[in-house]
Length: 564
Image 1 (spheres, helix red, strand yellow):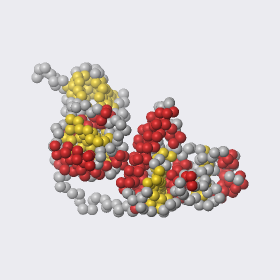
Image 2 (cartoon, one colour):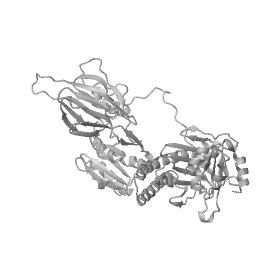
Image 3 (cartoon, helix red, strand yellow):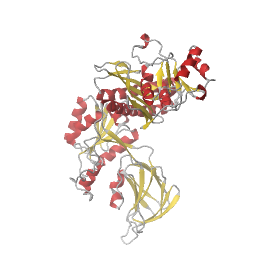
Image 4 (cartoon, one colour):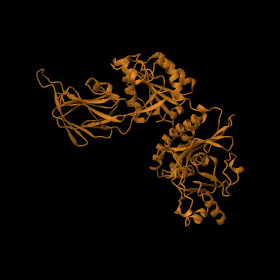
């Protein structure tokens, strides 16, 4: 989940172990001031589905120590709700915000400036137990009835059906990176930096074989443990536990869903927590790196670079719910239900983008296909298409995009961002700074002959462009998203594009990207294409011919010959 999406928060569900009056008072005051709903549940009390319903964008908060935070993971992760931890406990690696910083941390979160990290979870299955955890699953011998009886167990371990061997000793832990600072660390395992780290580790507990060491595997690995005797199994320090009989397999693998953990600039750092709470030998609380070791800070972004970054972040944030809803469209048969999903996707995308822009550039105007025009007293206007290729989206086709452009005045695009949620391709450009796809510079082709070129066609009501160019070229394709069409020409995936009529939100971002890549965009007569923000009913038809550049004159000549 991208942090910009948190700016849409209109509902908070707080889980607390022992109500901390100061923290809860701060939280209640802040939510009241910002008009955000608040529900407080104590650990052990059911977190109800009604707490999340009504189409609200929800943030989970834990008030307590790491135990309360883990209870929050159990409640919020299955619902894909991000969790922020207020630390009112003592030894905490997960809940890291001091109660005195609640107002500041939540304000930063509501502005979309917090970061959301994914945390690996695991699922464990055996007879009588099917559970999900985030720290570790431990398998240990049952305490003997008599002190003189055997106190160890033998566990046979398989990784993706490959036999690893037998572990003789006090058992083993299978832990995530989050769980690496607990039982696994006590048993001599390594510490994993947990943010966006998707692995599992098999850690022997007091093994009787000197050569046995922790083993790290991927999140998708199927780990199977078969005990030679009855053993105890515990998940996340006893949140789930059971007894496993001899020869009963225990299967562990990465969970189908991850936990979303919110971090703000007010959180204690992970390395700082290690130093302060474990007395970590590599550094003390006030240790500083040698002078000149840390890289120099990046110079402050200029205005257009900042605007492009904000637009990219907004597009990624909007792409998350859009992609989720696209998956629902693919499963729905009824036309009316699909229409509702498409409308919801358009609305959510538009709302996330507009909120991100308004947070960062409150004086700028916004022109959106979904919500119309919002005024501003700045010469800059954002032009937004929350979903370009709505027809494709409605039919479960992946060729749709989110397009965001910044205009200087009425018709000069200076920033363009086009994001394809299904492929996670990010095209972007800044005036006089080139065009990029996922950070790599792009450029159009250099073909100048029609018979060597492949063309794209957008809206072509009578099929005239297709008829005129199909036999003259290597083909004419129509993918259904004008913004993506322009990006594909800019990146050399096609040589030219024809659109019978255009709207500014369809093409503003793509034209910025195409021109910065070195391509060309005109009308049917060869006049440089000029955007217009005039009302659709007041604008004349606005055809668009876009190309790699060298092919443009041949296209114009053939258009003239065909009287298009």
